[in-house]
Length: 208
Image 1 (cartoon, helix red, strand yellow):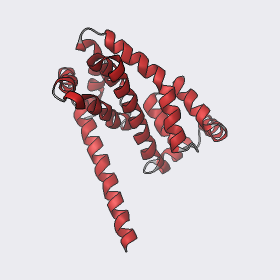
Image 2 (image 1 turned 90 degrees about the vertical axis):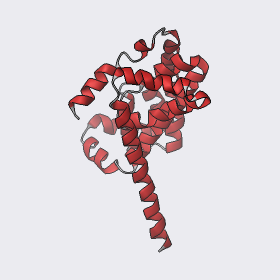
Image 3 (image 1 turned 45 degrees about the horizontal axis):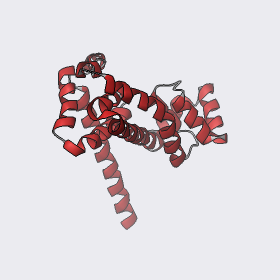
């Protein structure tokens, strides 16, 4: 009886967490560009030492919903400088990748496998990962042949171990994150950071 209770408690926590993440992402996606600027300034000006922490957490809902988070990466460099911005971006991207991986391996596993099992290239990747997990995940992150967010879900249904996935992903993403954070430090106006958000916002509005 106790096992059943704890199973239901765990399920409730998962559902609640997913609803929270979806709600957060919906709020972020509903923000027009001017309010997205306001969000980034709020993170910097009003949150103080918690700003980098909140910026990092913002990666999770966007990554789960396959929304490009590069605006956050640029924003990290712009708002906090290279060292702090890079750390917040690196942690955030890794958290987002891990959250999407866990979601794909648990709740979304059956759906993903049904969509991917007929693709020879996916089978080739899965076989290669089974032979050399760390190396393959690292290279796929270092040379992004697939979009960052989609790759999280593809890798979730391969044999790679979670700890190997997290470490290899973090190391493989580090150069591109560092590069974007550095570019963020060179930006003079926040409009340049949020330049691509108008397109994302327009596409989102068409489906709402």
